Amino acid sequence: MRFAAACSRRSTVTAAAPATRSTGSATSCAARPSGSPTNNRPASRRRSPRHDAVHVAWQCAQRVRAAYAHPDPAAGRQLAEQVVDGFPSCPIPEIARLGRTLRQWKDAFLAYFDTDRASNGGTEAINGLIELHRRIARGFRNRENYRLRMLLVGGGLTLDPPQV
Image (cartoon, rainbow, N blue to C red; front, side, top):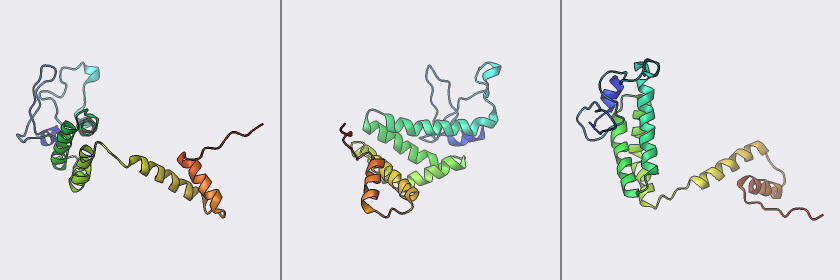
């Protein structure tokens, strides 16, 4: 419970969700329902307090996913800004470290929402495959064979089927 109280910074109440604990700030790393740790669940489905850190980390991951998946880039950027502002103060060390990293890379992280969601992920994936196969090859002696293997790995090699 100490994780939720320190990570949570917003109090929200909806018809579908119970109130959350709050420390009074504007954003949250993750919010945890208030009241008893059982939250009116049957005994077989009650969450143990020792799993609070995992639950909060999962909620933080969902907040990052929600920012990227939001259909409106402006609203997605706003969610991402809340993530950048809220994660560094989380008492879970891994989330706090992620928050500090995102804060250092804030401009690049938020640029995704300003550039029509452009990303160099495809280029990085192909480069990773090429580097992997370069290491596996352990030194081709024939430059043309190396070039053909890299094209094959990257999906850029189209060979005509053999003519029979």
